[in-house]
Length: 234
Image (cartoon, rainbow, N blue to C red):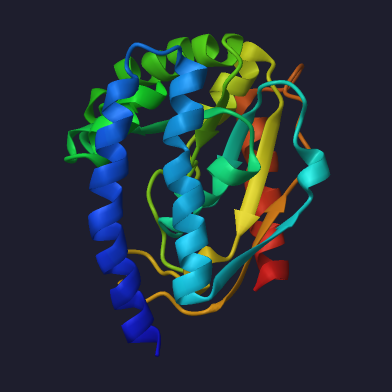
């Protein structure tokens, strides 16, 4: 039944996403937090469709570790699943993403209204300055900043090279850094059409206080915790 369920999910999303994203485009006169909270309805509906159609559920461990103040979320990246799931678990958030995503019809246009930090990866130091400047701005305006430190989705069981941008943002702002591990790739793999039923576990680590730490140490602690937790989830 997995191929059939996956096909039904794909067809429903093919119709629902453009409709919802088109409605989001009318939110541009509203304040950023209002735009975000309405736009994130797509994430909630997608998680519901995954549960009902594909039989994919979510278990969250460590929710008590989510800080009360805006934080930097550094999450394992294996699937499209976490881009939806994080919105249903953490408070108002913006993502650090490649700017090409904003060019996608409907989805990208709506995404642009959620105040993302859209960087051009080819710009190097300029992209890093943008991350630090806009990341600080978003944190000051009450948003969490979501960063996938591996930079791109990795196949299930594969460990990517952790980039230092999120750790530099933590060092420069003093905002708590929260590591997040999950095993979504086991059920909805990277670029996979098939979505296998089961329970995806998202594990949230204790916040890392970056004050007094160099970016390299922050990044090392994040990587050690995430990869250590992945071993437990696997």
